[in-house]
Image (tube, rainbow, N blue to C red; front, side):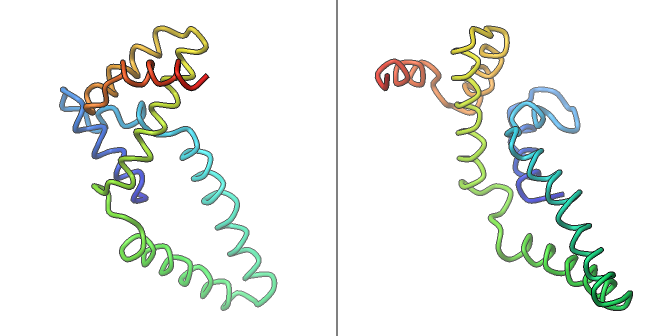
Amino acid sequence: MTAFSEATLLIGKSISDTDSKRGFQNAITPPWDTNLGLFTYLIVVPASVIYGFIKYGWLAGIGAMAGLFFLMSFNKVVLLPKKDSEHFRALIIQSMIGRYADYTRDHNEFRASAMKELLEQLDIPVTDITNNQGNSE
């Protein structure tokens, strides 16, 4: 599980009032996270390993797999922000605000009200968001 997925799980469970395993993780995860994960794990990683096998032989391919695993683990432990960081929280909230604005613009009241509830559970006043949108146009 990536650090960002852990962050969405942590926040999703914190705003849920049920004992479900994921809480509202799926509702608050930004859409771009899915596309980025699919691209990374289904295209870039296999392509890198296959290239290692073809170009340098099976031993180098196995070394490439081990090196890739090590680099991904090192990245998660040392370089990426932790799951409870303000950086991840800000990314999630910004995505939620953007989706709320899109739903409101598209007159999708059901989704807009659901996103409004989630934002308010994160102590983000939605009336301020809608007032600021009107002033920016």
